[in-house]
Image (tube, rainbow, N blue to C red; front, top):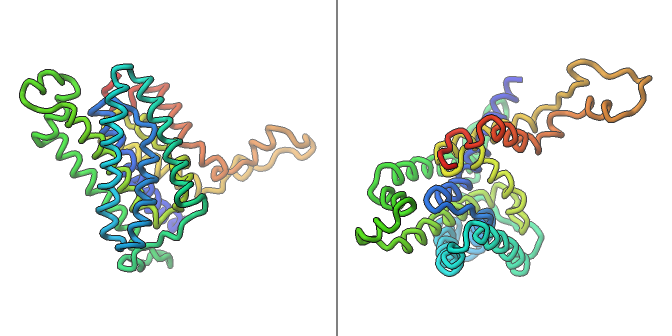
Length: 314
C-alpha cells in the first residue's frame, strides 16, 4: 500500500505538471486576450511532431528550443491574419476559427507524418533511472519534465505580476486605447501573447512526446481535459491552473491505480437477483471509471463555484 501511494503520488504530480505546462499557454492567452483557443492542443501536437523531426535532423536539445519558436511563429501568424480579423465579429467567430483550425492542423499532420505512432525516444543524456524506490526505477526524464514545468510556472508568474511587460500586457486587455496612447502597439502585444501561449503548448509537446505516444490524434486525447483544467482552476488564473492541474493529475492517477469497487467493499449482491444494471454498477472498479473522474470534478466545481477555484472573470 505504501509503494502504491508513493509511486502514484509521483506519477500524479508529474501528470499534473504536464497538464499545467500545456494549460499555462491557454491560460495566458485567455487572461490577456479573452480568447478561448480550441486549437491550443493542436499547437501542443505540432510541438511534438516538430520536436520529433528536428531531433532526427539536429538532435533533441536544439529541437527543444527551435520547435516552440516555430510553433510560436505559427501562432503569431494565426493571431495576426485570423483572430485579429474575426475579433470584431465576437467570441463565437473566434471559437469557430480556432475549432476549424484544430481539424485542419490534425489533417495536415496526418498527411505529412501519417497516423501511426512515431519512434520519438528519450534523449540519451536523460535515459537512465534517477533513483530507485520500492524496487521501482524512476526515470530521470520524468524528473526533467517536472523541473521544466515548475520553472515555467515561476517564470510566468514573475513576468505577469512583477515586470513592466506583464503590466503592459494586462493593461492592453482592459484599456487598449490608453495603452496605445502611451506609445505601445496593442496589436503587436496581442500577437506576441498569442505566440508565447502557442510556444508554451509546443514546449509541452516536445517534452511529452518521448514520454507519451506521439501520433496524429494526441491533441484529441488531451484537448478535452485541458479545458477541464482551466475551467476548474478558474478561467484566466495561472495559480488556479497550477492547482487544478495537480488536483486532476493526482485524482486521476490514484483512480487508475485503484481496483476497488462497491462489491469489494460491501460484498457481492445476491446472485439470485440475476444480472441487472445495478449489478453492473456494483461491480465496476474505480480504475474503470477513472477517465470520467476529471469531468465529474468539472461538473461539481461548476455547480459549487462557477468561476472556478481562483477565477475572477465572469
